Structure formats: structure tokens, C-alpha cells
Length: 254
Image (cartoon, rainbow, N blue to C red; front, top):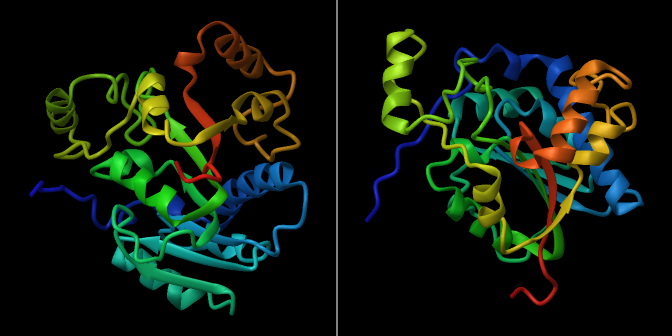
């Protein structure tokens, strides 16, 4: 039996996970994309928020969906969420995203934003997401690229691109940690990871229209940064730092 190394208590020392404005801004982006896709009110849909952590985003989602369930392995973060957010259509639970405690074909929507790299086995994660989604259900999937200049969690150059054993040493030398838990994939690795789904790519839409999709904290319309990112999309899409995909479960559950 394979032994997995979990990243427990991730919320410790992560002040942004408790930052109401920061987390709600991220939630607004997700709601704007899902609202654009469904072209209708989300109030009839049931959402699973994987990696719900402190529950700020999950609570925000509950204002738009019929019911919302947040799940995370971080016990302290889930306890914080349970103590601070008590909407009647909102539930939090401690659980492993590689072994979700829900029946088949249960959720209309699953949120999995910047989660895959924190999970010991991202293939098992995606299998579970596929299993619990209803036919034609949607997973909102935001995925960081392994090949980025500055790694997003530790802000170190090329940390995610180098071999894992070297990454551990890199962290220790710079006293940033003792173990690099994250398992980032390249663009091609992400395509393989999500191959069971039909992929609806929202990356370009969001970059071209950051105002509509509440992404102005990352990009400003008509800015130099936006122009550079658009150039990357056009000429080297495989180098895009983050991908915003909607993963649709096939109706025939193939």
C-alpha cells in the first residue's frame, strides 16, 4: 500500500487564508466565471469546495448556491470555519480529497482552485472529483504551471521546476522550510491529469477582460503586464503561469 505524505495544518503561518478581503476577492473571480458559464442563477446548484481551509471563500459561495460543502484535512482551519460561518446551507467537514465521503453523482459543481499541487496523488483527486460530479457537472479548476520563474508559495526562483530532492535542499539552505510538499505539473502534465474531462478554457477570457472576471488584483486592462501575458498565451501557452479551466464531466460517464 502506497504511503502518502500529507501537508497537514497548512493554514498555520498563512495569514492570507484569514484575510477576508483577499479571500472574498478570489471567490468573486470564481463566481464570475461560473455565472458566465451557466448563464443563469446558481441558486439551484450544489457546490463542493475542496481545500476550503478557513472557510471564507466557502461562506461567500453559500450566498450564490443552493447548498455548499467545504472539505479540508486542516483540522484547525475547518474548526475556524465551523465557528465563524453558520449559514443554514453551509457545511464544513474534515476529510481527504483523495477519498471524498460523498456518493457518486452528487454535486453540480466542484471548486478545485490551486489545490492539485498540495495533494499527494493528484490523479486520485481528479478521479474522486469525476466520481462525485453529476453527469455534465462542472469542476472549476485553477492550476499553477510547474515551469514558472518564481514559485508561488515560497517566492523562490525555479523552485517548482527543479527535481524534488533538490527542492527540499533549496528550501533548507534558504531556511524556508524542510520539505517541499507541492507537486506542480507542466501544461502537458495538466492536460494528462484532466484528460477524462471535457476542458473549457477560460484562461484567455479572464486575461483579456480582468474587469468582468474580477481579476484586477492580478491584471489591469491595457497594462504592460496584460500585454506580456497575452503574448505568452499567443506564442507559448505552455509557459502560462496559471490555467483557468472548467472541467465538464461527460454525460455518458465514460
